[in-house]
Length: 237
Image (cartoon, rainbow, N blue to C red):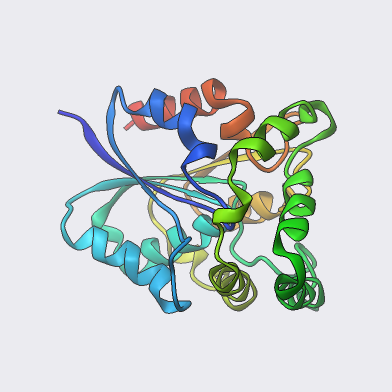
């Protein structure tokens, strides 16, 4: 019998990014992708995931980028509903502070929220360009043609940025008892690999896979490698 697997997507993303990974996973899992493109307030990001879990028993969750925050929230609030956990390009806090030097400054995120009302497509193009490492540059143009820039709602994008600024799950990391698989590209410009190193240092049962010369979307540029890691860690149960 196939296991249930829930993918928690990142900011400004949709099914296109996950197509190849979902295809590989679907042989062994019942895959559900949860993205946030129609969310009308910040609390609904977590509530959508909680509602999904009410109807399930043990679910393998994969959280990417913003989705890694949602995954951590689920781990802390509904641990009995969760089997395996995989965090890709993950973090417990997206913005930096005096005591946490990893991540973006809040000022940059606030500026992005303001600029969203001018031309959100230009803003998204810049963000997406930084998703790819120099070695992955050839993926960018194909990505841009297929992601569907005009389909993203500006207000929803703002809510996602506010969520990234607001959430901080560092305190609960030491209480996590699940095995957590961490996958992170060494050339990630959106979320530096130090954010996963931090997670690995503070979660009791975790393992970090560093993907050399890879950017923020390893499952898009390296779907087979990411699939193998997910499957191997799951089979080690």
